[in-house]
Amino acid sequence: MTPLRMLYLALAIWGAIHPMYYFVSWFQENGWSLMAMVDAWHVNAAASGLVWDLTIAAITLTVWIIAEVAMRRNWIGLIAIPATFCIGVSCGLPLYLFLRTRPV
Image (cartoon, rainbow, N blue to C red; front, side, top):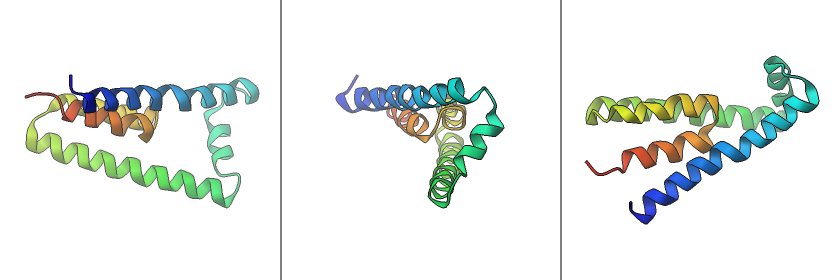
């Protein structure tokens, strides 16, 4: 495995674990309501701006993944889509780059 692929994998793991720490901590303090968390994301204009920024980035990444998978037939890359929407762009993007750069 090349150093660049190892870096992508490390960033994907970090992007999965670090945000989840904060999500789980929030749920433990405030109850396990997803709608309450969505409401918390829109507590002020700065938070709403960040949510929309990440949402647009996630949609853009999804379009890119689908377009590349259709062209390159690298079906394993589709795993990055649920990772993006269930965990976040911080996991989905480096995971897709890791999967995309595997030897053919």
